[in-house]
Image (cartoon, rainbow, N blue to C red; front, side):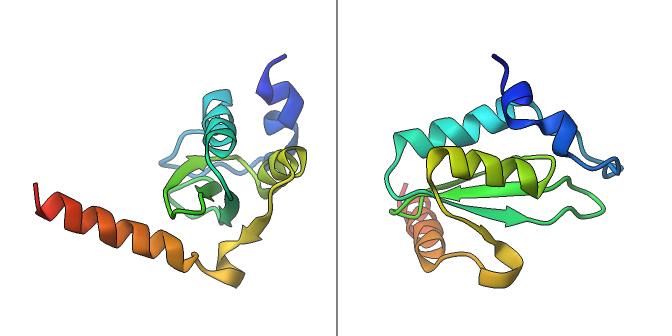
Length: 114
């Protein structure tokens, strides 16, 4: 079964597509699922559609590691999160978690020491 059928990317996404962006694909959803299954304490943060990008979701692990992928619509990532029994938040309401910022800072310091 393809994720598009299971998660309803085509059915749940809005008709409006940002001009400069591509649509969410099965690979985008699969990448978020793989990230969530391979790490502990994952939470999803939904980012709104903008003029330049489609709706995206950021998956953040408990150590702050994160990945961002297109999801097509908030309903898609809500279904994925429900199926995986993981929380999902609206980044406009909650902001990004502190552990994500700390992870980014650790990465910047590591890159500076190379």
